[in-house]
Structures are given as structure tokens and as C-alpha cells.
Length: 132
Figure 1: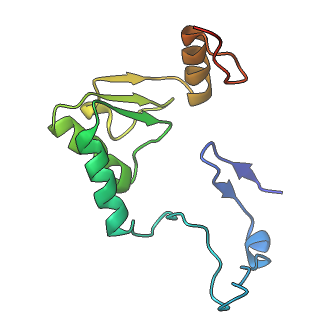
Figure 2: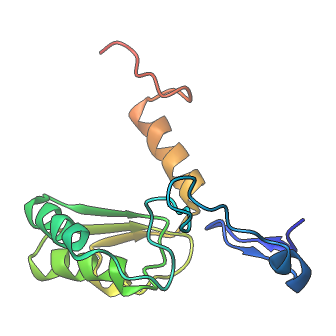
């Protein structure tokens, strides 16, 4: 069992646990089997960055949910929106690197903030909006 699990899913593992870890190879090529995600320390593919830049450029506002914006891959979009005059709202329990660019920052844990928001909007816990 992990010594500690952080809110972002990162876990503190012992050397013994890490030493026993085995990567499952791809059945077709034998290479590393990896989900289509960017892990910490990897570069975001340029085409994905450009796609996100376009989306931010077209957005009426930017909402950041539960990110510390510690890495530039997220912070760059907050900066882009702020420079364009697009309102930025950040919901994160702790301060973030993007706070100075935000119109508003809600200092709550993400779960509590989103639960309060759905309650205020009248969205039931099952996510099914009622008539109206």
C-alpha cells in the first residue's frame, strides 16, 4: 500500500514497491504501453498545444479547476487568456501560480466548490437536471 496519496493522485511509494513495478509491453510491438496522456516532465505535443491555444483564444472565459498551475503547460493558457482580457476563474484550495492573472479565485477544495455550485444551480447529485 502507498505510504501517502496526494489529491492529484500522486503517491509516495517505498523503494521496494517501485523496484517491483513492471511496465506491461505492447502486445504488437513490444514497446512501452502508455495511455494517451502527458506525464509530469514530458513535453506536450506541439499540435495539442496549438489546439488549446486556439480554444483559449476563442473562449469567452477560462475556468481552471483544481490545478496549482505549477507547470508551464497549464499556466501558459491562463497567461494567454489574461493578456487577451479574457476573464480567468480559478477554483483551488491553495494558492496557484496563476492567481495574479485571475479575475477571481475560489479558495475551496474542488469537490466542495463544485458541490456548492451544482446545489446553487439546482442540479441534483445524480447529474440529471430536472424540468425547466
